[in-house]
Length: 373
Image (cartoon, rainbow, N blue to C red; front, side, top):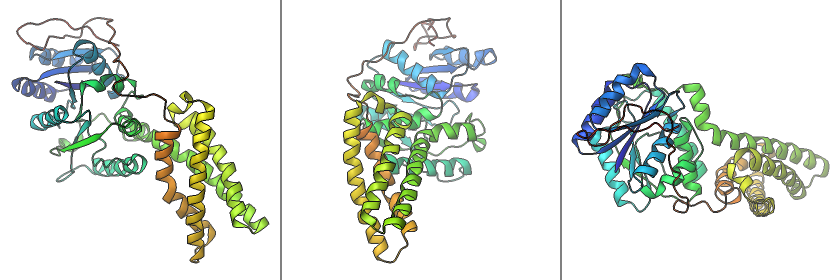
């Protein structure tokens, strides 16, 4: 088992974490995410402690650093499970080891070190995780409490799959959860301590830019759904006012809005949608649209029959069916064909450039490990 630590402009807390892990006889891989020459001495210290250090010159983001680490492990330690931990001291060694033990016991599951956010927790962290948790549970059905934890464990067989998921920065870890649901990968949680140091001042998370990246997959679907909702609602109101007939108006409005929604989701929202043939995707979407149409009409009829006006009834109906529609489109209609955790060979790491002050996992026998782009 390896502990993989992505590090950008680290301080003495990285050194302390690596020292504690090495005392526990744990192999450590540190990825320098373009921290620059000013931080070379810190990486030299962790190298001297027995960690392997790889990296690159310019900052590329946490997701890129993690995928570089997975590629290095796939080439050099292909049979090793991996636990990812942050470099700022907020993950305790006993918790890291508990996640590692659970990965070894779990049958191919992704294991999250889940905080319960008790005690003195920064407001942005508490509310940000709560919001993301609600969205992820609604979109995937995964009962995940801590969607933003950086303490995660993966079995060795998952290394190739980890490298295939898009994302270069903080959005990568959320994308892993979304793809896990789509690809049938189990997700388990192990409760860990909630630790925030100095109000999380060491975090490189940029609230506006990185939040947009994190929420992008769900935002794209929400915008697509909202656009088709507007088309559907306006068309429905116009047709009902002209014809006075609810059922044909609902059908006609849904046909138009579903066409708009299908094109937008296949091209802009779900990356796997374009890998599936247009006929197959359209057929499955048609079946889903028909099912959702029946559900839509049933709920809408029930709400209007108890005296609710058409417009608020329409809004409540769409909200109620939103999560089911997202999950079915992601996992069935626009799922890339043939995705599998074990079927994808792990992509080998490419050796280029110069070394970044690396030593082997045995401090008594230093060697140089090349950086990997």
